[in-house]
Image (cartoon, rainbow, N blue to C red; front, side, top):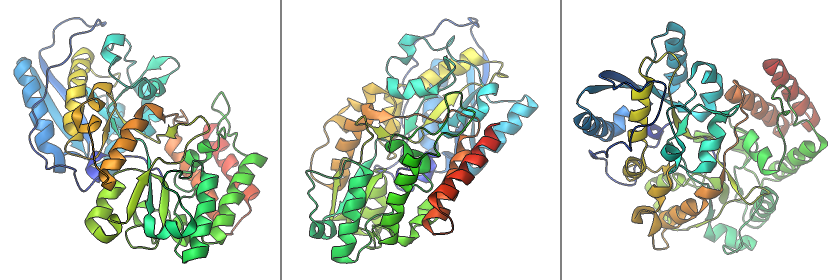
Length: 430
C-alpha cells in the first residue's frame, strides 16, 4: 500500500554511499516586498536528516555561504516525531525558523501561520518543478509551500514463483484494486500464500480515491464518503479479507511491521508501494529478491497514480528574513541539488531537470531496482497529489482507517463503520 514519506531519515538503506556533495548556486533573485540585500542569519529546519545525511546538508550550506559571504545559515534538524509539535511551539512563541521543511500532510494545519510565497517565487522560479506537485500546495489561490522530495510514483511488486501459479501475466498486471483482489484470491486458492496486504486501512483515503470516491464536500466542512458506492467498495475488500486473499495481519495499525510480508515469504504481491520497499527485501531476503518482478501499479480512473504526501519548504509569517529564506530555498531545492540528494537516498525529485539526468533517464537492466526506477520516473508526471486540504488531514484520515479496520475484523458493518467515521469527521470539521 502506498504510504506517506515522513522523512528521508526513515529510509534505512541508501542506493549509494553517502558523502559530501557540493551545492550549486541559487538561480537568481526575484521581485518581492523586501528587495533589500540581507546580511545575517537564516534559520533553516529539516526533519530527521542529520544522522544519515549531515555531510550532504552541511556541504550545501557551506557552498551557499561561500557564494553569499554575508549570510549565515543556522541548520536545525528536528526529530520526525517532534516536528509538528516543535513548529507549533515556535509559531506560538513567535520565535520561528525562516525556512522550514514541512510534510504536506501537516501543511493545512500550519497554513494560517505561513507566508504566501507568490511574492517570492515567480513563474520562472517555479518552472523546473513538476506542475502536478506545485499546484496542490496552493490554498485559496495562494502558494504556501514549494515541493522538495517525495517517495516517487508507486510500483507493483510480485513474487513470480507464486503469482505465476495463479495465471499472472507480468505484461498485463492488475490495473485496478478490483483486479488485484481477484488475483489475490486466486493466489491463495492455488498456493495457500496470502495474496496481499493492500487494504483501505492506514491509507484509507488513498484507496477510496483510487475508486473515485469523493471524501469531502466542496466547502471541506463535511464528509461525503458515506455512500452506497463506498459500502460496496468496503464489502469487496472484506470478502477478500475473509477469503485470505488479503493477509490477516493487514489490519495492523503499524504498516511498518506487518506480520505477513514479501520478505518473510508469507505474501505474494503488493499492487502499489514505494520502490524503497525493494531495498529492504534485497538486504533481508535476497532469495525473495531474485524472485521478484516489478510492474506498473494499479491506477486511478484517470490513469494516474496517487501520491499520498510530499516534503516541502515553507516560510512562517513571523520570519523577519522572508526574502533571504526564499533565496536559500531556491538554492537548496533546485534541480541539481535535488538530483544530488536522490543519488544518496532512494527518493525522487520534484524538479523536471533532475529526471532527465542519466542517473534516472538511462537506467538499464532487468534487476528489480532498475525496473522500479524506470517505472517510477515514467510515472512522476502522472502523480496525482490531492490532499484533503483541511487543517486536520492526518487526524481525520486515521479516524476513517480505524473504523474500516473495525469493519474488516467483523466488529461492525460497513455502514456502521462509515456512519461512525462520518460523525467523527463532521465533529472535527465543524
